[in-house]
Image 1 (cartoon, one colour):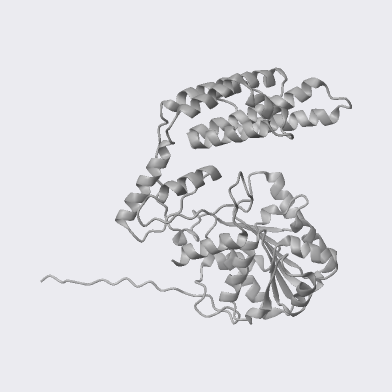
Image 2 (cartoon, helix red, strand yellow):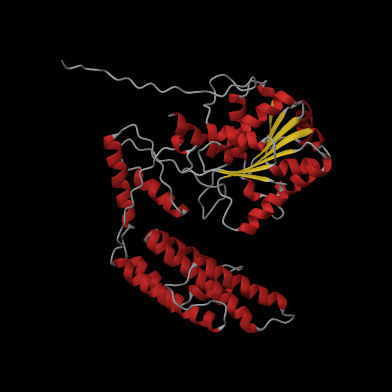
Length: 440
């Protein structure tokens, strides 16, 4: 006799239970709870990959503080969009009166911020605003029991995080709690030590997506690498630029500011190190020699040519045309640098510019991106697609190309600065675009 069995798999979610967290708002994850429990005992730096819930760890600690003391809580983030994002999350998940959660920005008048401070239990802010209010004595941290420093790797040098942590130590002598959060602490051990020292960190909690308590919550990513061969038409441009760069590297090598004259072995970091070395030598000498200033100019030229090589190889003809056109325009202006003027009149560079004008070809990756998007939309018409570009010119060019695809309405997210006539987006506009992308 054959038995047919229907098997049903049911997934049960366990949610965080706390009188200050809304029911069924946050799924319970053991690694987050373990880190939060540890962070309640010590000033802690949490190092966790993006998307694994650093903010939920902060939420758990905030809920505990709301339950066990009456003091204020500050949640700091380096940008306004992050501040707004964190404030929304806290209002959506905490069961306290939303009016008790205030957002501080520079757009709010100092007097109004002072009144908001007095009535608020939780303040979400950029660090610069809190620093300004501390300097003007509008606020005091003696009644603050917990401070969250998001993107804590910024807590070095003269950044506002350092000042706020120092004032916290001075204004509240005991019972202070600090949580630093970052996905990218960096590889410089000295910088990590500086962050820990500045934020009084005594405990570090690190998790990766490979840790056994994290692994169940990580979605595997399918990564496909596509190698795009460059057109033969690019070869002549690359050859000329490499020759031009090589000529300058030989001079810098003779001056002992770079360790190689090989174009294949040089990189951006080595060129920047050369710049630091030259500037240091100039500062050290009471009367710097002309040779040092010549080295500074040549290093600047080398950086610009290296950048041009990057553009032709990764972005294509249009990006490089725009770059050289801006350089030529700048060379004719009153405040142009010697390196710009030199390159704008250099025979090899002018030969590159002339040859580029004869080319009517785009980088092959543009066509490939368009084909990938078309295939994706044919298979799943309701797909949401994000295309990242390294350069602003490329994003502008690519967005225009994508407009030709049926039912595709590309929207560019870019920084606030105006660059070469390309108007930037305010932080509010950036947040609105991302919101629409998520909801539509």
